[in-house]
Image 1 (tube, rainbow, N blue to C red):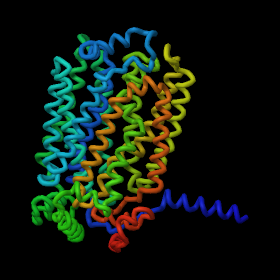
Image 2 (image 1 turned 90 degrees about the vertical axis):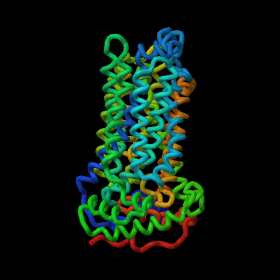
Image 3 (image 1 turned 135 degrees about the vertical axis):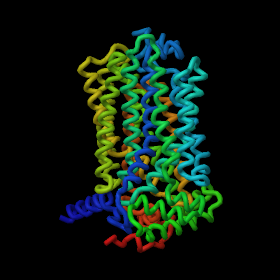
Image 4 (image 1 turned 30 degrees about the vertical axis):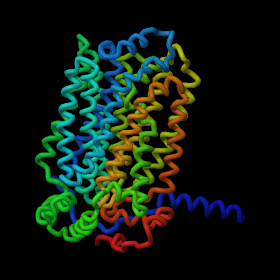
Length: 525
């Protein structure tokens, strides 16, 4: 009986940590409602997610098109056509081919660090405008490319756009939204990413059929459409009240914007918190140096760990190279592009589900449920391909579609968890004085591992073969445990109050200190 009681108390402890630890409920809610201006601002800003997703999806598709490969990567094209002499897993292994894909992320990494200063000094809108213009230039160069240098140059401009956009847009959305709707509003950005990838896959599927072999030019240039939306939006939309106070100390304008986006004149409580946060931030001369201080250790760890883990789910393996992966297991060019469309439909659908439940169930629950689902499917896919796909030949049509179904299940797990939450959680955990620097670190780490995985994946696929799925599965298990133990629940907590959660956390309170602001417990009657 004593053993049974011990086991029961232990399981209760872990259950409470997983689903209750740190959940604050309706802490310190502000007055306001969902206004048309907030929805419009968040949707237009999320067009930056559309750009990111489109660029993720389009590169994998065009690199599986024969005319594109023949023009820019003839060596890869010849290897692909040599048939049985080269392993299924090694046909696309080319450092030049992966440079085309991953150069965007190296450029994004560098530009995201510069974006921190622009976002802090000139405002969120300024960085969004730079993002839109850079993507317009990059898409024009890519669509008109006549040689490899022009092609890579276009990707570098796209990377600058993504660096500035991914650094500023999640912050913009988090600061515009009410705390109780912040999760859903911010997931609009990741929904844009998913829809962008889906649109890219559909466009690739259509342009691949164009006679004359120039369809890839349409695929690369269409990024200009969401970039135009973002550019126009950055000109006409208001900046966030947080940004107006931080950069201009324009209290009157910030109050007017706050009243407009909240739909009420009673915004004094929220305005007081913004002024308090701004007064602290104005004492910070170097936010990158500031975030290295011990009191910001939780935010610094999360700034690096969350984007790192998001990339180590293996999702960009699927996003970059889904068409190539499906050609590896034996599907034709057209079938592989159509399969990529199918899996992105699953991702977008599950991201929408996440949008509706994240502010009710919380971030931690979705992280762990999605992690378990991804781990189970990655292990299954790895075992399936190890047993049935050798170095030569291909899977049967039925087996190839079983892999497709398993990847759809994996994608749905990502769409519920690390996809949207990998952007949401970092954007809401930083105090104002280090917010811009923290988000820059998050984006830079994300782009670094995008670059690293993008540059090494085809070589890893060649050498590890189906074992690559076990590799990423191990990382999914590790990141799920990390969330379980170290991330407090942030749902419904005002963005300027989130730092108090670290002072209550069983592990992080030793770094942050013991002082807790009781106002975060007050319910909005």
